[in-house]
Length: 305
Image 1: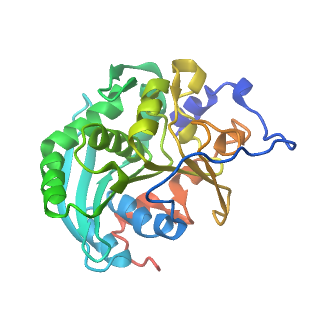
Image 2: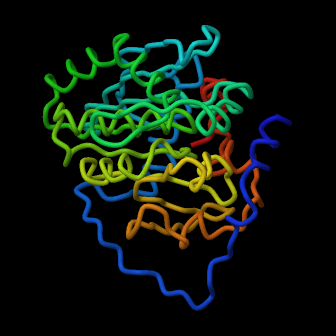
């Protein structure tokens, strides 16, 4: 954890600024076929994301879905270190007419450090839809996708062609979910109007060209951020040219009210308007008053819905 704090210290103080009092928020310009739903984001999708941290994701889905079934769980190596394991799973909810694709986020403090440092200082790789992305995120996604998640998604897409597809993840899982949404829509594996990406505490994934590609291809995309969560500010934007895609859904500390910033990729009216480096790892771990990883670790036992 000390190393992670050191990583946050690398965020330049010059990047800090406060939301101007006289500023007027521009009109939102994005049009969604699946609008952001606060109730769904704080319950069904959040529990689906948290479930990926556990060994029995079905138990978490049972808390917030009726009749949803986990179809396949795939674990694969994240990077060159064989001890670093990433995970993805698919599920289907006939009652909600939804196919669910989930990626596991940070599994321990070591991986949390890697998210902050490896993305900034190590390697990038071209992305087919456009731009370059972190090789760490790229490899984690593709290792899981090619280890079986692709086959299961294609089977579900063929069986339930009219369903919506929800793609989600927390932290590193959010970065991989972003890549999955881009991959699926760019390659026309599913009707983009029925795909929705919702992530929690997602770091920057790639450069401006990648962000543009996601904005172009993924119609319904929402990056949920929480107050002083530091991870959405990594890697530092002006250090590697990495930038977020739209649209950010920003909640302050209590996570009761939110602001959607979809006029530009990075908006001062959302988390970029917070003072840096006034960051809190607690805000990264907890969304909607729930520790996301603890949902999975406990298999959602004793969680009141």
